[in-house]
Image (cartoon, rainbow over all chains, first blue to last red):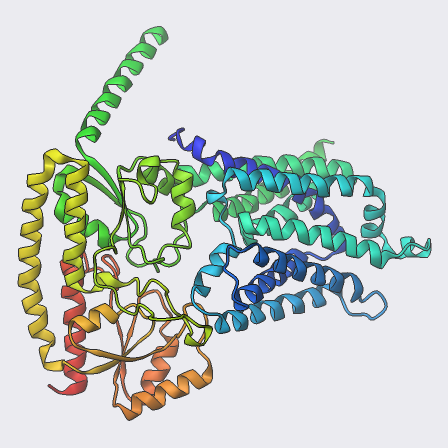
Length: 275
Length: 311
């Protein structure tokens, strides 16, 4: 292996570790709530916002495009917080899936009406972790830090709602308001991380570590610790494979997640017997 | 034993390393965006250059997935040759930044935009408005498909290589002259093969072929997919079928990286045929270098046109 590559991969490695830190935590909530595909849906709604801005004549690099996509994400967050089928028998995954399909199709329609350069927009929305630059890494770290502190302060409230929303509602807490805060902060994170790492990778970072944690532990804290370790190991291993076999980095990390999770599941019975 | 092995290995490594740098010093490391540019650079540079092409000929050069080896290759490059005209806008700028190689940044001596002195088609004139649809403000980036432009690219590469490696000037000039001669001889053959079909009308999938068709006097009357990645609307396809029937157009040219389903259904409606041509070196097995690329496309196109026109 050629170690000089490391100096070029440094921003990508740091970025992936920052993403692990935030997403392994949010993933616990997402899996606990059973809204597995909410990040894909919010990411698509964010793309729709960006596509709308480009259609309105903004350059893809214009800050207005980012604000527009953030605005759409907040609308999506409000939608997921309000249209909850608690009473209505409609599974929330159905609403999330519908939002995903309609938003994806609306992106196609919007881009078909936009002038030139529309074909490049997709690349700009869906980032590639290999080409992440240091300023992006620092900005992302700051945003995640702020959101992490916010979640740490209100961790009990968020967790109680994720685990048993009805019990919290019975205590007279506005679940809707807290759900909006959850989805809004979540949308903030996802819009950012999809822009630097791409949809596929962000989904893996969100779901796989928390599933890996569930294999071995009941307690939330332990699961989170397992998720963080797993995410870190997989990121580094995936980068190594990507360099060693010269494969596209994002897709390699995603497949490494699958391999490591399978290995963990296979090792589980052995560990259980010994315990 | 162990104490002996270590220094021996280290010494061997040092020798190997100096050997590598010694040969690398006398050669110019060239990285190109596409295999077309690599092929032309090879014609001019010969064994005085090392050449790496990033996008494969079977790939759509608008969309290229960067790999770790790309960063290393660009980091070590003395010269980067880009297609330009915003063709690589989706993937090249972050790659050049990540490579942290000051020699090949746009504007530096080691960055060559191959499109600067070629003949560019489809440059929009006047104000660009949204009503015009998909417009490249800098003109059509598929200019290498006119062999006249291939010659101009070769001249630009000859001049740039002579600037970067002055001791190779005579060799680059001589190799360019040789390429120019072979290209001119081949052009006579291609012009003759397609001469009977001058003025024939065609439809193409993407706007990759205006330079190629213009060179051989063929006329493109429409496109299957008005925008890359955006499926055509039913009314667009109906209008295209009507237009093809009215003007008796029988051939749809498709790039190898697009699905054949829509073109084939259109072709069956008008009683025509779909023809997959190679837009880049490496885009078909026979298209091994720049001259072979035209050789291949001209042969296939002439055979198809002979069939449908009966000439």
